[in-house]
View (cartoon, rainbow, N blue to C red):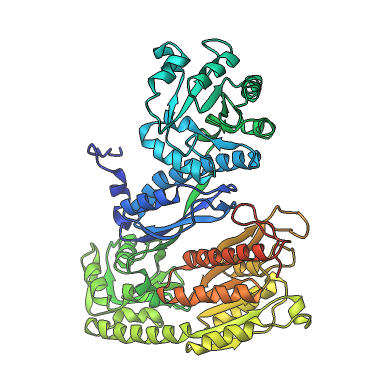
Length: 595
């Protein structure tokens, strides 16, 4: 029967769940699942820091984000990332949903009427500040006017016994505007409006939801010759889809309540995109291919009633392997043969382990070792017999050699242009010479590859060949657009299916020449090689290089690097929009872009 472990009150069960991997460094990305206005990022960053996370990248509050766009990248231990999914996603989703609704309302008003949302006052205290921020981020106001004012609602009117009496009670506040709610409770709307004006009201809040009431108040103010002195606000279940029609009325302010503050969440998701386990980099440097030499011979061993499963288990545990990865495949009078069911193995897991294995085997029931007992292998597994006193010096020399090789690889760059228009000489490749010059000035060795066809199989072949040739950085230009012929990102994904991709701009798929959802760049990693797919325009490549030279020394990881390059390129597109009338941006960006 399984035992049930009692968790102490107030303890966090994740401490137990993640106990074995708490030293892993985990990078996570929060990604938009729908288009909308981003809000809550500043608050999310503060919460992330409170959780102990490092914030690597964030998008700006108020920007228009597209589906699939990363808005926040954080790094920490597994527990912190799990907490981030609970805390940060909801915070951003709620704020962005409100901001998106507010933005939609303001857009529908077309500048003809002010949009406010005063319903934040009815929210729980801990949510009020968040909701107000989201409303303003979306472009609306949470106050009916920006000047100091007193808002007198129906309950004030009821307690003072009438509109005139209520306004008289606040008449001493000369430096504050008087806003009073009209609901037709003390008489007709026209009568209430007249009483409010005579009492000194500056803004009449017609809170009935009936358009005819707003028209009645407007008619009274116009007839009295004071329409320019008193503002009309209108509220009462107003829906966002009602705004275009109401904007044509003579109304100054529309108060949209639940349609903004109770707007649906703008969906986001958190994905773990990179995990670096403690010691992983060190061991990876010395991961060795067994080259089909996977057998171990234990010689001068004698058995009488021994359990072969126990023997295989001892070897597996000592070499830090799974039990199922070691089999006893042959037994003779004075030796046995074991097979390691792996293609690669960590050198530090096997080097100098002969003595430990033999000692543990000698303590198994039914096993006796002779004076000449030893372990033998014809391949890499022969490191098991390395004298223990030589292990550290051997690894020191090996690691030094690997670091030297890695350093040389990191300084080798290969550049690939792409596209039929370049290959046919229709346009000149200005990118490759410029990239080569910039890297050479910084001490890199640079080679230019052939012009890649717009074919993902061919692109993947070129990239893999560059990896095999020992280039630490491979840069491609062109072929990242939204047309069907643009295949560079797809080719890179063939080489690294987990490559990080980041949108520069999104389109409506299938509109015009756009056969894909937008323009995106990509960063992949294969072994020691980082592969970066950039757009074709020369000015965009220059901007991307500035980011590269700034970020590469810090080794930010492919996800962070991709988003930082994409973020810089989005700024380029915004600048282009200001210079070219043919480009159209929705809010922060939405542009027709071609290479």
